[in-house]
Length: 373
Image (cartoon, rainbow, N blue to C red; front, top):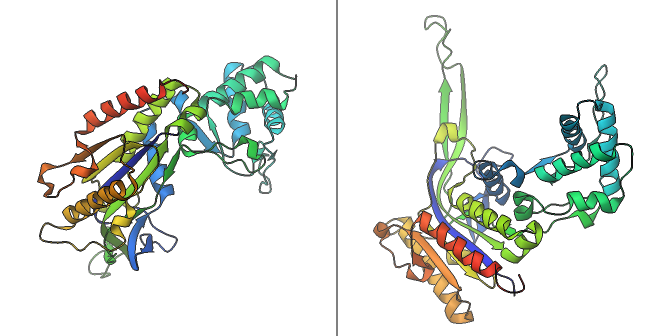
């Protein structure tokens, strides 16, 4: 049976707009009959991928781009500058074509120089996969690859972020990578209450006697919410994607750190909503379980505020899951302040951030070293 690591967090943001829709307003969704502020899973994962670069080595990371031919050709010429740009691009295009990834010349404006061939969609490949492909091209040059040979390079030993978040190749489903992580949209635990910031900007070169008023003005919609955040990581799928137990350990550590610490950056220069979670619960279990239904009824703040009430609601939901279905986690940890004024013992063994990472590493290492993994 597969092993999952469930990550839960409650995090309060002051008035802000870190994830907005096409209308510029903070994203929302209806849950339990009330409209809640929302942070999309795409925005959360993008923030984590951004912060992976501060934790992981380049070789552990991937690139998501249409420019796979130009990028590979550049790496070919970095190995052997004697190879012309045209040859490098031709050989790279041929290799991707053999793999089943269609590339074509993009349209250019009149009098604009031709550009290298591109994929018709974003392709997610690991840096070390691109490096290995470039080295193979330099070695083989005009000798064509077979599909199997290219796939052995670009469809094995995936980068950490590719392994965690998956990959979809429209031209050939065989190149898809099943994501080891599933991420929920973060939802406010209480009803959303939109507010507006009317701002003006002064033109420094306008003399008061010549013109009154602002040089420009506008309005930014903002909201404040306590969010429930949830994601689950399939350890067995991660091991299959990465092909290395040590890579799994690096990936789990990076993922845990960024789930807890990373946030999207929308309008942060205007709002500086750089908060940390009020509560984090991490559980190792045989089946993923979200506690979102703790907030089907919007939380009403009491004399302790919203965070304490939301924390107790999550703890009650965790207890219910165990009592009704017998789905107690194998092990769980909790980061929460003693000043929380809430009974949250059912959410795990209380610990600190560094201790959680260390104990989670120990638990995962033990699991993947078991026979059959």
